[in-house]
Structure formats: C-alpha cells, structure tokens
Amino acid sequence: KRVVTVRIRGPEESIEEAKKAISAAVGHAVLDPGQANPFRMRAIPVPSPEASRNVVGRGGETIKAIEARFAVKVDVTKANVVVHGQATADFLLAIDHIKQLLADGVSTKEKVTGCKKRLLQFLSDAANVRRLCDETGSSLKVDETGDVLLEGPTASLKVLREALHDIEQGSEREVLRFNPKHYDGLVNQESAALEALRREHHVKLGFDPVRHFIRVVGKAKYIGPAKAAINMLLRSKFPDQVVHVPLASSAVIPLVIGKQGKIVRKLQNAHKVSVDIHRSPPGCDVVGTNPMGVAAAAKEIKQLSQDWDRENAQVPVPAALIPVIIGRKGANIKKLKEESGAKSLDVDRESESIRVNGEPHALEKARALIKDFVVAYERENDTMTIDPEHVRVVIGHGGATVSAIQEL
Image (cartoon, rainbow, N blue to C red; front, side, top):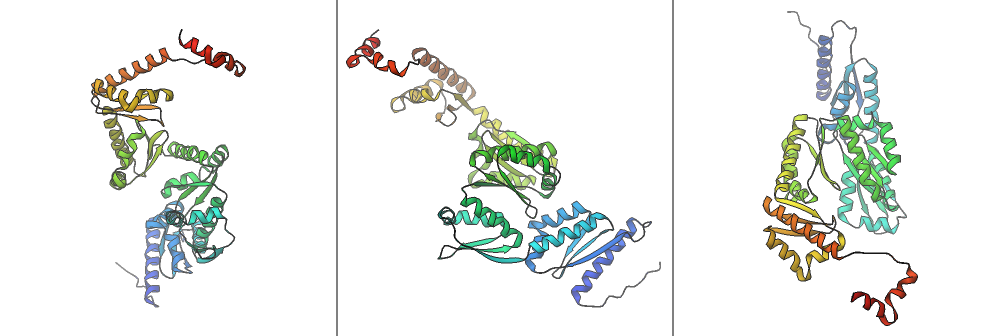
C-alpha cells in the first residue's frame, strides 16, 4: 500500500497542532470522498489563558455545546483554538462564536463608585459575595472608601454590573442552571415564548451562554411563578428529559434533600441529573439528558414521597380553630394523640393543617377525631355582621344588652 510522508517543521506545540489538523482532514475526506475539498480548518489566536477557559467552559460544557450545535471539532491549545469542519455556513458561525467568546474572556478590572447603602449592606455579607462571584464567574471586593473593585472576563463583568444595579434597585434575583442542550433548546429555539413569559410575569431575564444560566430578576412575588413557567416550558420541549414530581407535602422536602444535602447530591451524581426543588406547591423537577437516568431519579423521589404519605397525613383545619385544637398548655392536642394512637400531631400554621404521623389505622382515627372536633366547634361557634353604628346598641348601657344576650 502506497503512503505519503508529510514532513512538518516548527516548534513542538505547532507540530502537534499541525498533526491534529492533518488527521482531522484525512478523517473528513474518508467520510465523504466524493466531495471536493470538504474539509476546512481555522486557527484562532488565544489572547490569554482566561480567554481560552471561556471557550472550554466548566467541565468542558461550552466546547461540547459548540461542537454539537455547529457540527465541528474544536481543539484548544495555549496558542490557538483550532476549528475543524465541513465547508458550511455552520463552520463560519462557529468561528464567529468562538471569536466572541475569546473577546469576552479577556480579564479586565473595573471600579464601581458611589454605591448606595443598600448595596454595601448586601456586600457586607460574605455569603452574598460568594454567591455573586460564583454566579458571574468574576471576583469583587469592597475597599475602605466604599468603592467596589471588580475583576474578571469582560462578559462576566457586564453580568456582575447588572447584578449590582439590580440589588441597588431592591430587585430579587434567582439563577436557573441548565445543561448546554436544554439551554440551547430554550434560549435559541424558544426566544418568543421566553419573551412572552417575561412580560406576563413582570420579570427581567438574563442569559449566560458560557455557563448556561438564565437569571430571573424582579420582585420576589413574581420570581417563583416565572421560574415555574420556565421549567414548564422546558418540560414541554423535552418531556422525557425533564420530569416534574409532585410531593405529598412540604414535609417531604427535607427527606429529598437529606442532611447537609447528602441525599439529593447522591441522587444527582448516581443518575447524572439535576434536581430543582419547589416549596409551593411542593415538588421537584428532575432534569437530565439521559431519559433513563431522569426516570430512575424521579422514581426514587416518588418512592420517598409515597413512603412519607403512608405514615403521615395533613388534615386541614380553619386557622381560627388551631389554638382551640391545641388547647390550654396543649391539652386538647395531647388528648387527640392519645385517643388516635398516632406517634405525633404537629401544627402547621403556614398550611393551616395538623400533620399526623403514625400507622395507617392511627391516621384514619386522627382524621376522624379532628373532623369531629371541627364540626363540633363550627356547630357551637358562628359569626354575623352588623353595621358599625349598631355596635353600641348591641353592647348596651354598661354592657347590659350583651350580658342579657349571653344569658339566653
């Protein structure tokens, strides 16, 4: 078999790049031998190590997303980002995209002066600073004069400046993290739906194509519904990769999370998914690119909820009745516990209910007793409305009228 020797001269690193390019060219030619000059290769100079990290992304996520989206092969060295691919429009788009990432990745420094008291108070908490730096991929510190010093890639500093402005304006912000495939499916394919969602829920949406984040900014009361709507849009687009698991009660959430997050981390690592937990209404969104992993993780969470539901019940009661059910020094609720045989009865004022734990027969007995308690209370207690002008008439002189009514 005849072979051709290609002699390559130059620095060691350049020789390695050339060998990779030649191998890639041969590979493309073998795949499509009938096409004239099917292969293209372009080397884009890297301005700094920080810039190349912007192309690679966390755990290689960004470079994988580029390769999948534009159907190219990308190699990153100290000196260049080398793009290999077919001579198509996608090849040129990939080059433009990488050039922008490299430009955005050049590290710069900035100073923010004249900061408001609200912002400085927020930044005095080290946990808030860590969260901002993690979210934006930048660093910041407040100097002794109250100025904020920023450092990081150009694109990251832009996001950080926006975050600081939002905080000064009193806006809340939440970050939704996605894998590259889901981020691309939402941001690049559902832009109209996201814009409609933004207007409907009165929030601002920020997009980070490097870290695949969507930031939701606005008043606290709007952020929760907006996040739920984004997750619903994601579920509709990737029904087998994004599964919602309703939970029997908010009391199941600590069981899903585990001590210091141990259970949810184990679940995420085992099935290569992420789990987004919602408190109202209680539920979890299981997200991943492998439908089997998503289904397995969702099944485990459902099992946790079912196990809790077998030994627990939440019995709704009117808010006004909760103090009566508790009784003086807890006498009434202790009596209900003893008569039902339940392991515990806990009052949940937020959901206006009594949480019962015990065997199935004890749960049924407790439900019946609490229901009887509510019925008896409502039979002996009622309300009516009167005109404010008539209050004095009902009370009577020296309370005579109301006393007479009480003696009826």
